[in-house]
Each structure stands twice: as structure tokens, then as C-alpha cells.
Length: 512
Image 1 (cartoon, rainbow, N blue to C red):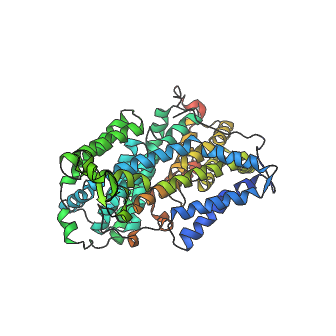
Image 2 (spheres, one colour):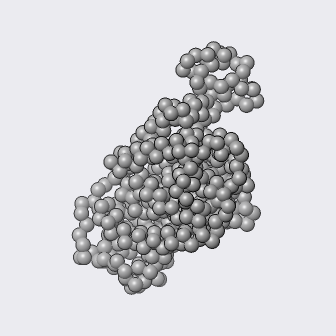
Image 3 (tube, rainbow, N blue to C red):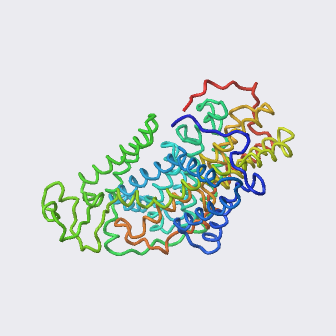
């Protein structure tokens, strides 16, 4: 990761009719669109959200003072931000990894293990929260965890009778935990570096907040799981016959990713090694054929198809099909392709955030809060908490939101002599939590994208469109996210965990 990009309160690069807050119009239009589409109409369509963001960016044009070219240039500048690329990479690699494990029977293995250990529908969401939290903390990407667990654990829970909305919320809660606490998480790194605090000290200082929220969330999932549990699904004989322990061998694939990431390797390297191991296990143990992972579904009458199909190596990947069904398939293809609409939405969202920065929208919000609300230490910390919540409600890619507001948190905290560790923890809590709660949040949409890939998948032929969870319905059940925000509201009001600059000296800050 490169040096962190920050913004500062300067003369706006864009001017809007109506003032600086009008620069938030594109993203406000998108949020209204998302509420209508997902919340009111119940349409969970990521490509529909892309259309809403595009229209929002066009609407913003008509309020720009001066040449539209400047507005267009800011859009392009935002679309090239590294924070967007970081999220996209996590989605693509995690999607391929989850799909490859899935075709190897990991879901069947989980169902077998849950049945053997008598883990029923009531307990499954709580355990899912714990295991998702462990994975996210190990690999440092909540987005990747949301994708992997939605693709692998979610269908197993559905088969056992777990409530789909509660289970999806448990997965997102685990992702929140890891995004907040993992030393290698982007949000952890950005929160530490922008507040001039060392990463190790920041992680150690935030454990007490994360654990309190996690315990409350675990209890909530136990209670809600018991109340909302259903009956195990009736599946066909072919599906039932495939349920067995062999797919659990892919726990080794997951372990490889965790160990490699914890050892300090880049997330691309860590997931790539896990992907290689999962592919080898699939082939060696006969869990999946080569064409299950990558398939060239070529028209039967095309030149060289019959020749390639007969070759020892190429033949394993070439599948002659009816010309109407020609195309590329397999877990690597579907695992990546399922996130293409979300990738487009991500770069557009970051572009809209850049417009808000260049137009002074962020400055206007923070100037109001700093000048009128933050008059005491308690109010200053409450302003930090509520200010980060407000920004994260609009900028849906959590690292981008954190970068946008970090300079204000630092400036306000230094004014009241608040320690860098404390500032970093306040900054990161809302950033980690709210990106997985709102229906338009990047983490939630990443998990939803993985859920869409289950429909019609070779590994989950029983999963239908009717089993999809509407993104607008899950927000009350992301318990850890809500509790984490609540913990920091209480901490800001009561002073729990508050440290001032003289209380503790930060170690040398590791630049990233």
C-alpha cells in the first residue's frame, strides 16, 4: 500500500451553485435511489445501483459553476484512487477462491460437520459470527471475508434451517470485527498512520472496545438464532448423496491463506497461495474436474475444437457445447465475473466522494461540527464519533471514507490534546462498522454479490433467486457493527478508555 492520501481544508477546486454542500448532491441522489430501489421496492440489483450513481453524477453537472471539464476531471481523478483498486482486488481474488473451494464440496463438508456435531439452525449464526471474525482478523480484509463466508458458509446454514437474514448479518458482523481489529487491515493502517500512531499500539488499545461489542453481538446471535431458527431444507437425493466430510479438506486451503497473511505477505499473495492449494486438492482428491474451475465451452462445430478436446491437457478444459451455450465458465470465471457490476459501482462511488472533497462538502460538514458543537473534550469526541458516522453513511467504501475524514479527526483531537491511539480508534470503529450496515455499503454489497453467484451454481443447484436476502433487510442484524458504534458513543460520553497525549507516547509510526 502506498502513502495514505489525505485531504485538507483548502479553497474548493470545484464551485457549485448553492454552496459547498451541493457537492454532496451526486452521492445524496445515489443514496435516495438505493433506498427506493432496495428498501421500498425490494430490488437487490447492483447494476441498478450503478445506473443510480451515473444519473447522480450527471445531475451534479448542472449545479457546477464554471467549465464542466473540471467536474469531469475530478471524476476521473476519483476513479483512479488506490482505495477503489484495493477493494476491487480483494473482491476478485476472494471471489475466485471461494468459488473454487465451493466446487470442491466445502459446503457439503460443513453441512456434514454441523450435523455430526449437532450444530443446529439456532446456534449456527453465532458460530458463523465467531469464525468469520477469526478469518477477517487473520487475512485483514472484511470484504474478502464477506465474500468467502457468503459463498461457503451461507448456503450450508440455509440447508440447516438458519434464518437467511440473520445469517447474512452474522457474516457481515464477523467482517466488521476483523476490519476493525486486524493489524493488516487497510482501515487499521490508515487510522493509525493518519493519527501519527504506531499500528501495534493502536491494535492493542482497541481490543477492549472490540471485545465488549463482540460479546454483546455473540449473545444477540444466540438469542436471535433461537427465536428465528427454521427447519432443515428438503433437498434432492443427488444433493443429499454428495454431503460428506471430504470437502472439509479445504480447511487447509483457508489455513494457508490465514497463515500466509499473518506472516506479513500481501493479501494477493496469500489468497493466490490458497487458490493454488484448493485447485490442487480438488484435482488430486477428485473433488472437482479441471473444467469445474476453468472451462472453455466451445461451439461443437468450431475449428480445432475436436482437436483440442482430444489432447491430454487441453481436453480437460475444452467442453464442446451447443453454439448457443458457448462461453467461458468454471469457478475462476464465475468467482470474478460476479463482481463486475460492483467494481463499476465502486469506482463511481469513489469518484462521487472525490467531487464532494473537491467541492468542499466535507469541509463544510466538518467546519460546522468543529465550530458549533465541539466545545469540550466530551463534545469533541462525540463530534468525532458522529462525524465519522455521517461520512461513512455517504461514502460507502470504508477506507475512502476514513481517508476523507482523517485530517479533521486529527485536527480536532490535537486541539483537545487527545492521544493518537484514541483518535485512531474512534476513526476506525465507525468506518469498519457502517460500511457493512447500510444497504449501499461496500462490504454488504460484496457479500450480496457472492450470494448472487450461488444462484445457478454447479455447487449449489438447489439455491434459487427466492433465497436471496434483500440488502435493505439485513441492517438490523449486523449486531457487532451496531454495538461497536454504541460502545464508542458511550466511551466518548463517559470517558471510558480516554487518553491524552501525555498519557502514552506512540512508537515510531510505520509508514505504508
